[in-house]
Length: 229
Image 1 (tube, one colour):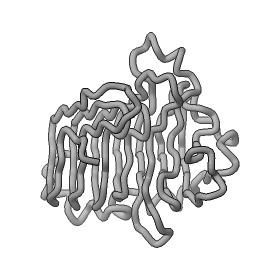
Image 2 (cartoon, helix red, strand yellow):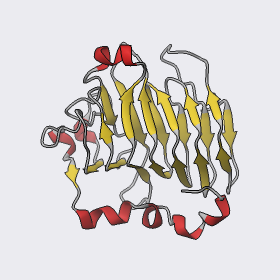
Image 3 (spheres, helix red, strand yellow):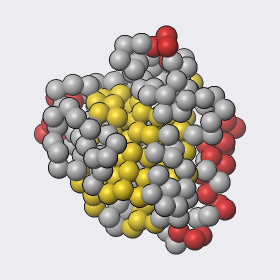
Image 4 (cartoon, helix red, strand yellow):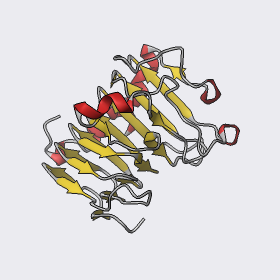
């Protein structure tokens, strides 16, 4: 995990307008652009680019607003409780399937996981999107109790209808919580998601606990970040 271009190891970090890239290339090895280990960490209008493991949201509470994150394999991963608001998740061209998120949540008691709100999952360059159709998975379970939620997000045609992928073909060994609410776009295939993952379509009242104020208690520390939304 020491491949990061930018490492953040303290709490209360705020990044605005940052562009961070790991230039290691698509060789199948870890190439972290940003590693964040701090609590109450916020990023606004930032762009993180890499291939495998682009953003390592290691621990603590994180808030990403209007950011763009690009990669191929588990390009948002870690053990943090993180909310991504109006972010763009870009699947870069790859000969292998692309996995957006890999939550490392190891216990059902952990208040961690990844929540994507009003975000956009898409391919990279317009000319490559046809070759990426159905090759992108929203998440797979790195941790035994991985938790990943998409709320009101747009899924382009690159998203596979099954949505969720097993970890190295071992679905029975994991108990993930994968859920959606209000997904839309060509890749929003409600009713076709992978049955082994027991994917959940949230009710409106269930969405509340994943909103930033509840999930990461953003209202208690957002003012100090000075980010506008």
